[in-house]
Length: 62
Image (tube, rainbow, N blue to C red; front, side):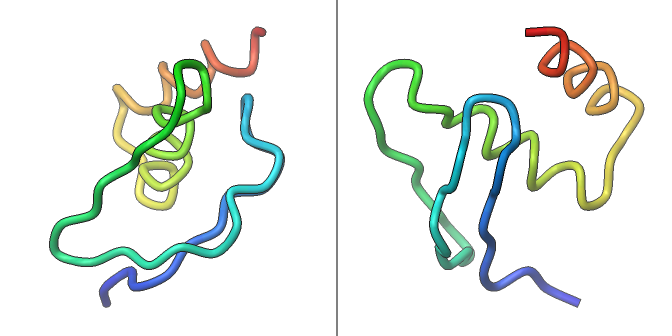
């Protein structure tokens, strides 16, 4: 199974990322504090690791 499209809603600082395609190489571009790492954490949450779980808990504290 391969992720081809994603949308992040109400996660950390991201209200709605809109639908975006995920390919072999995907580039996230945006201003400072636009939520680029939050989008990566949300995608990583689909199949989380122990380290990702710690990052998500830190995000929810804010």
